[in-house]
Length: 378
Image (cartoon, rainbow, N blue to C red; front, side, top):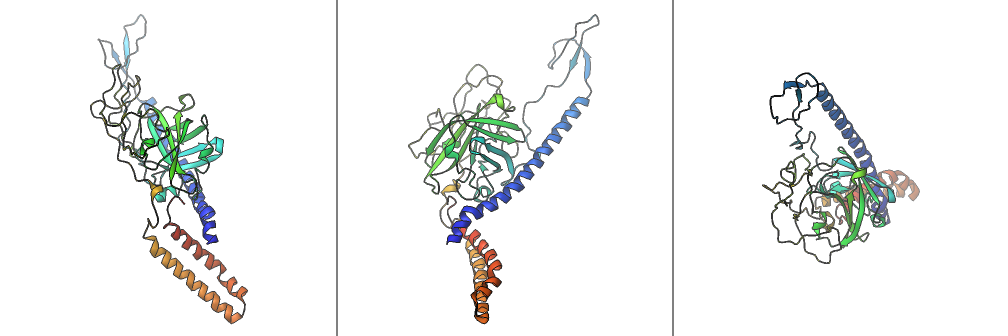
């Protein structure tokens, strides 16, 4: 039993550390391929021929006139299409690395993976798939363990308002500033929903208090545009826009949106004293000009909430029972051999010497599979 406690506290961290090292290499490779692709596009654009045509009247393309004695000519180029690509070259799959998450004030540096399933959170902090990616408009939400599996969010309660949270993705480097820390109920899903799609925000969530899943600690942060790269429109793992038509730009009139029966929430991470779950929330506000916004013709409702992985109870992975039985049987066989050798040699030390290494290896796999039967918050 003491060995299992040690495995929980440190053994799971060894697994996660190994996974994080692999994820860091994969993320670096993805960053490199993204830069190479961008450079290739820039090179092709620079070498593309420029069309020169006489200026015969109003043009629907950009034109630049040069005042000389010669007849005026116009240089025309096709206008850039601000729409995001409909599909990402390499769509993110569950468990894929998508970002680097740093919290300098508490000394953490982890790779964030796609998804918040049990297996994904064993690799590191996980991104809620139904929320925008970090560095995009909307509320990007990330969950992580406070204990076990490297405990990436172990000290998030030490963050204070004004602390930086730095996220690096293939789109750039983005600095968020903590503006609220609160404790909510597990059913308060609205804290990870996007309330204002014209703002880029970040929400970190984990169990609270430590070694318990009774509540959730919520850290909310706003993007600092002066210390961040250009923010993109909200997309899913395939690169498809989440909020309908991302090219629609708000005019001076308020953008009409689908009405909801839920009152607007000014601060999505404010302390909540109710267990009411809001599956989605759509703001009713005027979006500043030149900011991508929700299309007024086809507003897209927020996806249904994903099950809270930390709320899973005992024996949530019944397939582990067979693995526990198999590895436990092998361990029992090793113990039997050790006892037999000890009797023959009339020395327990000799028997232990023969069975120590294989016994520890088998015991590790027993612990690993027993752990699959425990609540994820332990």
